[in-house]
Length: 486
Image (cartoon, rainbow, N blue to C red):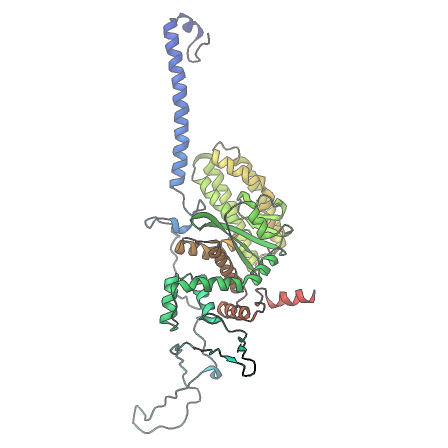
């Protein structure tokens, strides 16, 4: 029989069989209890880590923090609040005189000292401009559609319907304004109804808003599809996704951001096929994302992993204590140094060639620390380090390729309006509603990048749809000209 490791063999041989059986039972029970304690300790550590998750050490948004939570405070500086001495002021610039509608001249009649009469002009009077909105009165046009009988043959003929006149009650600017309020400003349909009535004097029912939205979706469908195709040809694209709800079912809102165009999709899947749809099958640029598995189909040598996400991973490592804390601290120090240099590159105070030479030893140290972390004995830290090392080449693309950022903050900022939309409306009720969300988010984000007016664009697109013409492109004029020349 096997001798328990804690007992000498001679002592075990002198132990009665009944006692040996009891000792073996106790030893077996002790092993089971130790395994159970180990499992509970691991579960407790996981729960403690989840309990202490914040936006700094996980992917949770800052808005998820409870009101009583306190963020680490920076040391208070010596400067007083407000504008500093020598800081250039920001004041509203006066409009030129040709853009002023009315000029009111204010002249004193008499001297405030001796009360003598005054006359003449001040060569440089003080100018004060007041901007006011006139009362808004909608323009109502009535079309009286006559049909007349022919005196010769008796045939009845109705006048032809003029091009550009809607068959419904509301014109293209009303339609565009409604789409702007619900799609760009994220107002509810009932609030939009109130604004249209109280501000513009346009009465409409809540049920009318959805058909106006769908008509706007159809009006901009071709330009939105053109923008999506344009993304397929770009040198750099940032992708991100967030949860959505369509018809009470789980869905996902996706975004692809390039330098001049941003496009959105709502799909029922979070899989890689949606990323392929956004990028196109023949995309050959640099893809900037987080480490989510839906992007793993793209070659790692043409990817850039988001260092903002890595910072949160390193913070999480630091919070696990022991060897993991040492690895996390060291990785954070290297990451902060990298960002210091990178900010100088963007400011133009550090040459890119110098930055590359600085980054060579930093890259070796980061990868060495990740290798050490993969063997640190803390399961979650080791797994994170191994996962990052699988894509180590994608950590450093921004160092070699100009125009590539080390973070995916561009996509995260662009998808934020979609997150606010979801929080306010709880998603969409139908596929048609999701198409409106996609179209409006695409139009608003793209025109904002190009500093173009959303309302004027939507109005023009709705007018073009009424005339049966093509809507204006979402691409910049320079791109359209180059495409036409090609």
